[in-house]
Structures are given as C-alpha cells and as structure tokens.
Image (cartoon, rainbow, N blue to C red):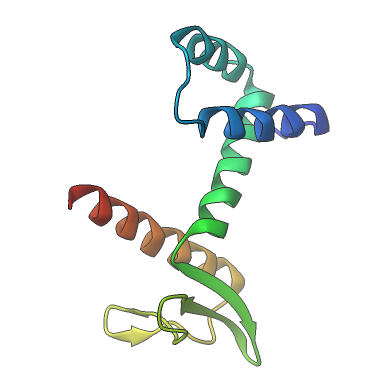
Length: 111
C-alpha cells in the first residue's frame, strides 16, 4: 500500500517521538494502534528505512559507471565477499547498503 502525505508526516513525527530517551507505555500503545493502518505502516517503514540509510556507516553514491557503496569511516568503496562494491546498479547498491548497515548495527549491539 502506498503511503499518503499525511501518513508520511505522521511517520516522521513518530520517528522523532520514539527516538526520545523516555517514552511512555501509553505512547507505545498509541504508536502500535496508529501503525495498524496499512498506509501508516507503509509510511513508517519508508521513513525508518530512509533514516537508517542516512545514519548508517555505508552509503550509496553515484559513480561514473553505476553506483558505489562507500564506507563512510574510510571513504573507500566497501567490500563484500572480498569484492569492491563499485559500479553496481542502483538496486544492488541499495541492497548492499542495507545489508552492510544492518550487519554493522547488529555487531555494535553485541559489544
């Protein structure tokens, strides 16, 4: 289902609220109820995905032949399966960014 402008606006507000250091149980129930609507769920998923991509270690940048996945810590192309992630299609680069950032987040929560 496609997210509406209103749902996207509300999703951004929810992302901010949920990012606070303290949130009440009532607010969590309200969020859960709000997200039951398929348009709201789609909007929140999209906003959350964009936020994670923008805050992650790995980013996708246009290159002369496709897209490169760059490790923002080193400024160099990321490697995956011992191959540099350069010259990828936009879809593949997006998938690699999501995978590497997810792996990095999981690794940092275990330490």
